[in-house]
Length: 548
Ligand code: GLC
Image (cartoon, rainbow, N blue to C red; front, side, top):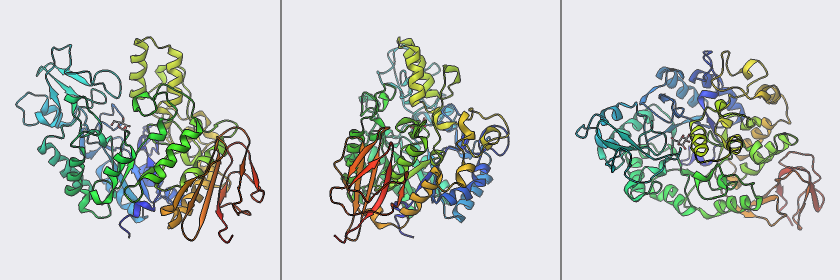
């Protein structure tokens, strides 16, 4: 196996709570994942990003871990987990564990100890500071999930830092004993035969709270290099992907240049912040503006070329924190099928490692709520009450949650048209999207023209394909809403064209020679014409004839 197997792979992300429930408690579980491994093999993926399954009080659905070395009981047991690792490996699917080491749950034994007092041996595992008073925190740092990032602790009279909810205290990476314990735990998992880690908000671990710095602090890369040496660096085939909201291409190279021995790749979000007012800022997500397609072309094309051989990027439209792409930038009504396929075709011929988030492959859509009582997600709830208090109109806030809220991605997977979409025989923890009779795996698996089979096709095409993996990338100048690019190497050239709009448009071949059959497309298009008519959301990929 080549050292960089992950450059050839497509990763499938599983949000276990919502994937498949085998016990009837309404919550997905590990056995449910095992049950569906053959489906994932059918789809052609060769790695799973598994969202956290560790023991957790679930204040942030598993991103608040209270014991890294045991499994949360609603998901199953450690034996189930071992079986999942083995069964995945048998099918050539690597299991990439989501790992949260920026913070733990406040129920973690380290924090329970740490809270006991200033001289407790775990005190320095977390970030404690004096404030001016119990009402006045050390400084104005704010939490990603609204409000101050400092919480006063009466027992010791100090504040602790929490960049997310107050139930997610931040670990103190400056403290070597804490780092050693984290590495020990990571090796525990690597020894079980997992394929690597997705590292949650990893760019925050070098925080310098006294300087109001959270992401990309001074010591960040020292810590990651140390982590690499102490853990996954000892496993030559391990893949690591770092969630890095604030990465620029220069920062991405620091993380993923193979010579620096840090991570395999970054998972950066610049393109995901284009439909908000303040584009570079992850906290601006609720201030909506429409996507301007030329911005998308510019940002995605920049990331295609700037890393060169000095880094590697992830390719994605969705994850468990993002709204569904077909509802977000496609059209989930009139052009549901076409636009869902467009996003598959547009992304999967680019350079990088593609990720498919559960349900994306069948075109699952956002859900609509009309009151905050229907919202489960802590981020959206905190934002709502915070902004309501600041005088924002209620309907604007509900609208923003419908467009961007994380519950959109978390409704149960739609397997078939039976009760609860075949997800659970009990009452699902989050209601199933009402459209499951129309949108489900069972109906699409039989249909050669389905979204699912388009995903299968593009995933298959990438495999061992040197052109897609390493070929040069060039954005073509086209009409505003057409995203067209060329991939090329000495032997061959491939063209991808996508009309990201509900209006017809025309693509001018400008002398390029191709015709006949597309590799993949979402309409019957006449590719022989010099000016190709593109219906709403039309997309195709085709090999260019190099003989002329
Ligand atoms: C990451 C996760 C998100 C979680 C947060 C705090 O952004 O993807 O789901 O809430 O980190 O751990």
